[in-house]
Image (cartoon, helix red, strand yellow):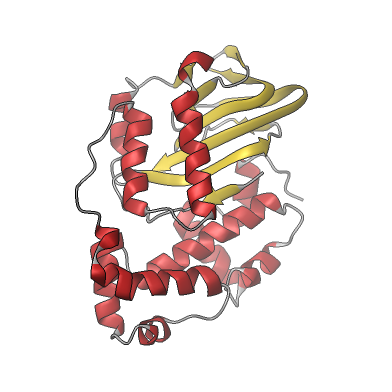
Length: 273
């Protein structure tokens, strides 16, 4: 039951903060809501969502899009409730209310649900096989939320020779060794360019610096561990994702997410001891 965070830089027009499928859904209670638009869909079994004074049953393939800061809770009905989900962010996330008419939530019936579930499954599979392209994901987020086809640009920046020669090898190095004490000079030497030039290429193709990309990936991996290993101490997770000092990790995590690691666990329904 995978869950992944930060699949691409957050300064794209639209992208995913998190995505997951085949999730053995535990009870969640959010009196203050969730800070981002949140999609939840039943794969198997059934669950109940309490929102806006209503009790809604989510049967197989039915889904709900919940707007930010809308108080809600949900729980399984019966022995099993498998879900898929996605949370959306990006520089244009403030425009999402125009799409959903500022509704606190939007329900999708099982008859209309196939494109939504296919999007989550395809995104998870692409991420796991290292085939996920950030720019394509941004376009697909539009398709998901706007429910119409966004015309793809004929030129994909990820196919640019400079991306292939300089950016892609560094991304692969970061994704493999993010838990090691990597530095931007070390990464730039890998492709025989200066740190300044490499950062300009990252800004051009990904919209962020090399250092920001590295830190975002570490925080994303930390989010995954915080939820998939709820009994692992924060300091151990910090070391496993490349932070030598747990206090620094907590500070960076709070700056990136708005929450401490323990608050993040609590937000997702895990008890904090």
